Image (cartoon, rainbow, N blue to C red; front, side, top):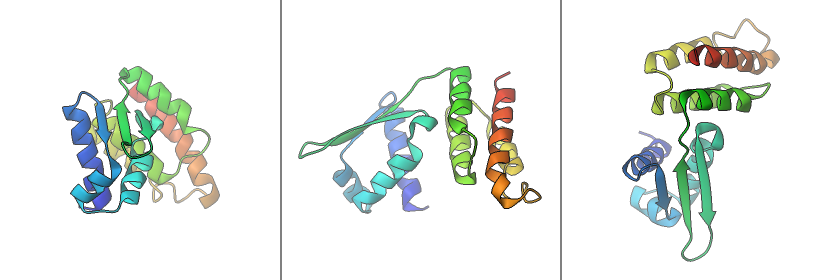
Length: 150
């Protein structure tokens, strides 16, 4: 397992155990997991974003911390939030992160997410010109999300 996956899993476990709120000290977590503090930053900024249903607060200094809060949303709210946050273009990595969040929150099943990921993959979109794939992926993803909402 990659270190970024270990960090994310550790934070997710904390969120599950603490009713959706995890408060961490970056250096302590880095020491506990055997990584550098910048790896913690990377995981937080890439996997715990508002688009994925999280609020991140931080306080710098000696007693500083990073607080991650999982927002509670209804299925419909979450889907509409994602539809609105996708914009005109969606890269494959962002799409996979959004699908992972949908599965983790129970909005989409694992099989739904796998089907969506397959349909929106670069290989599926290969017949489209490379410069149009992210635009096409965004449009298709939004429509798939709206079907999930029914």
